[in-house]
Length: 272
Image (tube, rainbow, N blue to C red; front, side, top):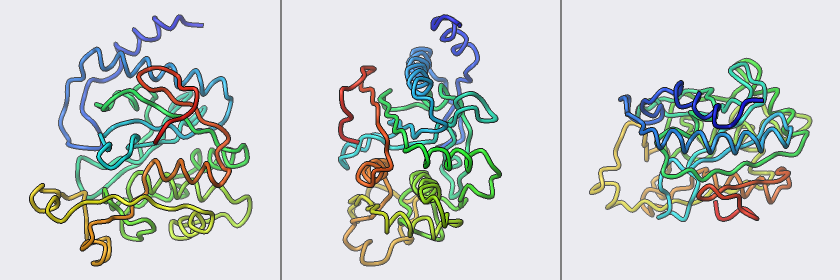
């Protein structure tokens, strides 16, 4: 078995120091200290995943500061054991360069945590064995079963047929794997199942003045995906990482969780 320091040095040599896939298409030099921090987080997460011996788990990171909305984690992906791209590969949806489209990406764990994040806090949620097994099978099969819709909207309306964001994709994939029979085969049925099963979206307030004066008009943010009444109040229902965690916990689909804040393992998971 390789010594952790040797693994870390290998990672620093071979992880590309460039920009985020989910925002602007420009190269960004990632400072060595940030790459080192990402590698350390990746090692902690992978060690926990190896110990649990599940085929897939949900892994969350802090890519954007959402504290003003009372949120901690902004993004999540599925860590898949023995994926075609590597032992623990994170499969997740990312916006393509701030455009109105998205793609599904398969990344190594270090790259997942080296994406110019706010901090290196991380949380793993393990699923009930049956759900994990069905989800892993879906994630390892053809792209046709991955419920991906390429039209991206940062504030996609939950259940929208026209748009999807990264958290909506996570929820829909989970919902497609939860039932042992009558598996939802499309996005509409998957979200409908999640609603019946107890999922409730979070509400994010974006004032009209903020939209206009703050310049929140971009190709990847489509307010008209929501009804006029929502736009007038500024209270937008959105699938968040927190709402997914809450759903998995209250529905009993989560087996257990593990979390690190400031590099320290927490006795119990905190706010998400």
